[in-house]
Image (tube, rainbow, N blue to C red; front, top):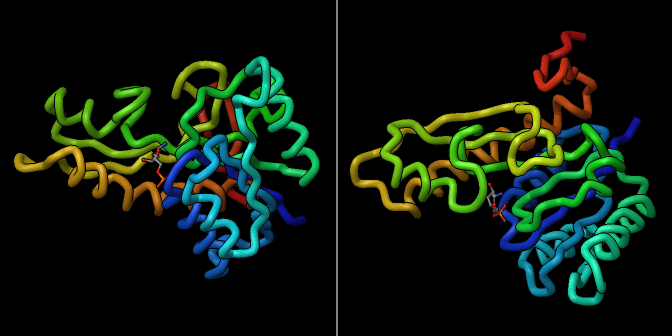
Length: 204
Ligand code: GRF
């Protein structure tokens, strides 16, 4: 059975690109990138989607009186594409409970830090300022908290003495582009099982 994927974005879309590349290379099988939704009109991620023949939709948050109205539009759009799995790929808003309830355990986020450390914005900057020697990224299911849902995959990278925020962020980004598609593959092949907040690998 094909898994229909909807991707929420706000910016440059390098993680979206990595998912697209992994679909086109055949690494991700039985997957359709059905729609990319952005809350930012000129997000480059929308262009990337169009260049690959994927429907790209801008939903303007300012057109809605409330966050709920905006999110209802997101839900109806995702439903109109029969989306089974939602990816947050650089989506810069905190999702409301309506979307989370509608797609519980079917929303994944990529975060540029080793959770539960350095939640929120600027993961690499927080890691540098704290002085950790290992940094990294996390793919997790999204729950009502901020960057707090069950962890699916993590990858670490060294922090070097001469790192700047930008050198560290790009070392982490390389790993994001590897583990996000891997998590999608595990999900679409039915290999993830949740036991409370623990994500287990099903061997089948
Ligand atoms: C990535 O660092 C991701 O971890 C974070 O936002 C950034 C998005 O980058 N959630 P891109 O738009 O995928 O290039």
